[in-house]
Length: 310
Image 1 (cartoon, rainbow, N blue to C red):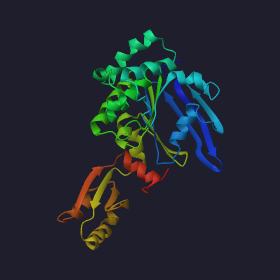
Image 2: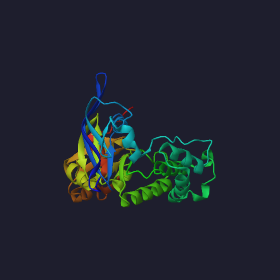
Image 3: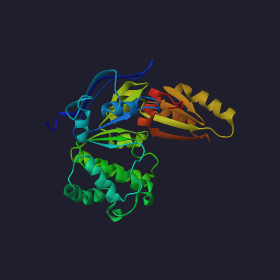
Image 4: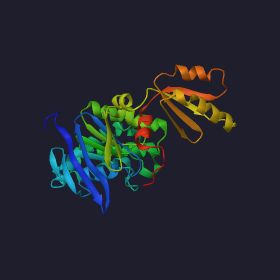
């Protein structure tokens, strides 16, 4: 396989459970050295898509080629080129960091000698060299996620699949994992990522697919999506104690915005030119924030602000 050839090709993937279509005609392409990020609310079909791609869930129609091989016909062989970081850590709590890596290496047919040579390199990559002999329960949450990432790399995969890899981590731990993932991209590894962190998507993704109810509803680079789907400026207005005064202000400002939305105590006003809005707010005690539009604004515009259940 050449460097340019896609490591993942999905064409018109469809998966149904009874009358419910959870993945609906989805097509994706991911070449080496790029990060493709799937975004979508709960129930959008992201995790089902990943399970289909890896050959863990049968699908109803469409085609999947993983590492150049057809899925599900040769899924097991294709997975030999893929590293997986699942949503929940499934490390063995009875083993040390080193032992977790050595045991996992056996699943991919690495010799004991090759595995032992690989472990120090991976522990160093994960910032865990000083924890080589530490049992999993004695690791922090961030350390466990980094060990899970190191484990996924034990067999030198060409494609890394990460399902919400930084959920529950503090900002420092997230940034360290992002740094490691960018290093892997520079080395030519392809990354397929699902995440609920828009900042994570903006930092890592070369290409983004936004899904809702199983369908692809938008696609592009982070910059392209923001430029194409949303007004460039956002004014956030924060309600104070005087709800009547706030409502009157929102009514007065409404004609100055292309679009307004309210979520809780915050009104979001979207506009191309914020100058008239700022002039109207001058001298007003109302708390507000002017900022450029971001990927989260795009996501919420396309999928809505209501909370979704799984």
